Length: 370
Ligand code: IPM
Ligand code: MG
Image 1 (tube, rainbow, N blue to C red):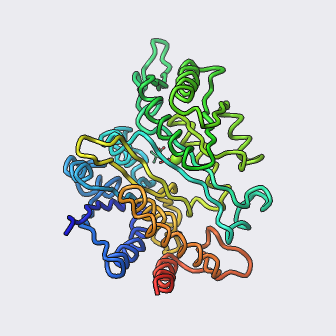
Image 2 (cartoon, rainbow, N blue to C red; image 1 turned 180 degrees about the vertical axis):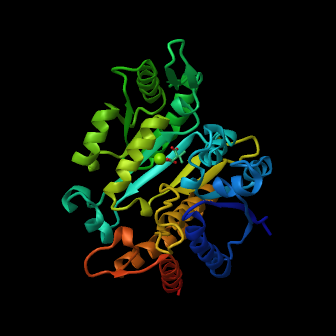
Image 3 (cartoon, protein in one colour; image 1 turned 120 degrees about the vertical axis):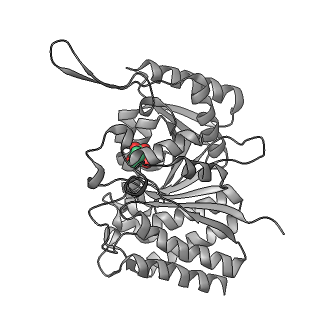
């Protein structure tokens, strides 16, 4: 019998634990109905870890994450920890995981499900059928560049410093993932930077262009400035297939793209690294939404992004395409049936909470598997 798959759950803060609870139902269903069993472990991250252990992520948690076949993450942060120094904040939990596990490619799909076409703030004719993927570099750039800090100047002013820095190696490895994804999709890749004002952006453009010409001649590659990309994403988002961009631009553009789909509460993501000597690819899955402190504890958070992150995990880490697709179909059917959390509420639908949504997904799974 093959060894169980090792899964580490890191619910984190705010609505993280609430949406993770609903994923547990889906994991249990998979174990019972599809005989996919996991060695499940759960640990603290973010503010939850700060409160108990005094650090946003402990060494032992990082070690469990390294050891796991896949990590499912909730969200971190909240007003309670907002006054802490940068190196002690909850956000360090996720940044350290990305960095320490070498998770350099953050895959953020924006998919408009037909039942939610009306939930977008954009016109249905602009977003219907949208299916794009943003590949965001996630272990480099201005998030990690040195020098950084806040200096005191002789004249009494202070100076805040961060550094955008990319090497050709960092650009190539994330570029390769984006090209490979494009080759399995509609074969179009748009590389996004500010080559008009930033040297790191110019190097990004040159490196991606050379990589494309050398290794992926079958992919239609285009280049776009990040500001134009933001504009194009709301003007005509369906022109895009795969977008590859830096850490900071990817952070911004993926939030923007997510709202095309109606709600941040719907979108999963995967962050992956390079395959190691043992054949394992480190991977972490998380919803794009944050900890949403304003609605935490109210039982109204949309669990779909976390549930769909678990589906992505099955597909990317374990090659369980059918099971991933089953969960995605169940989620779509729940929405089509008119059940809605407040973030995607529409006229004529039934407003429900987190748990009802999770239970409904399991009910649809039962029907689909019957
Ligand atoms: C994200 C978040 C994080 C980021 C924060 C929580 C550090 O906004 O995953 O997009 O900026 O990367
Ligand atoms: Mg973000």
